[in-house]
Length: 297
Image (cartoon, rainbow, N blue to C red; front, side):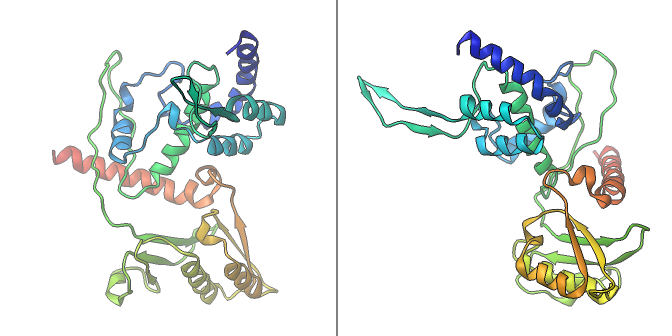
């Protein structure tokens, strides 16, 4: 890489760092100023157990470009990054014979000034998705004496079954009976024994919400709120693929339900339930689990 190119990339790095830095979680340790990696043992262990290859040469170009666009990176800088950094080809030469050139679609350049920031952003995306993965519990912060090099916390990790819950809560705190999706082929009434009255249960082999089941959840909501095209009700939700279908949009239009879908990778900041209900619930849940693990070694 020429000196002129290094200077240009250094300028771009200083421009985009102000937008990338706020996206990096406080727990991120790699390539972050005044942070060590000794406290990242849990994160590393989790990544190994999930067999995720988080390396410089595994960064997906299309995913990084998508994230940079969502951060509103200047179009000129983005075009330079795409042209100089991503749109590359490579070939192999063996005994004076050269193979056909292939597009390089993964990896960041070793030694490039932009690589650490781009890699940190990519790692943050993976960890955000990993926190919502079933069976993984993010530990709380550990307070220890200064100058300690090894600080860790005992955590529990089990590969349990995934059960999806669709919570329906309004702005003043009132709630409707939830919808539960069980990892089964057929739903049985005993599955929701002890659940809040009116809970609606479904079955799906994966335990995840689907487009068809979400339409049934919309019918469940409509039965309780009794909205009409004249008296509408607003439903705020994330942009999960199961929430986006022609059938769901048509049903909402006919029954006075206005859908407001939040942009990707921002529900942890913008979604009201994540900020006011599920966030504190996860915090208290983690405290209870940590207390039990500490008292039952």
